[in-house]
Image 1 (cartoon, rainbow, N blue to C red):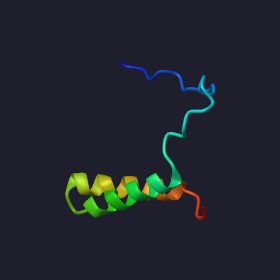
Image 2: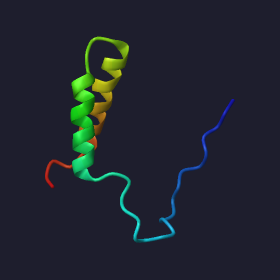
Image 3: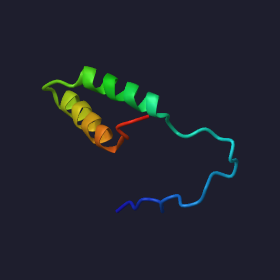
Image 4: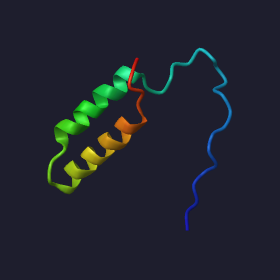
Length: 61
């Protein structure tokens, strides 16, 4: 059975690195996921991922 690597708990070595994704980029990705949401298994997965991401995003910028 494969096991997952331990989670990263330290900061990046270079503090000037950008965040993995900006709030704007996350919202754009959600819109794209919702565009592909439909009754297929892939479409359902896209809609479900958009719902999960939406719950994690702040409501204000």
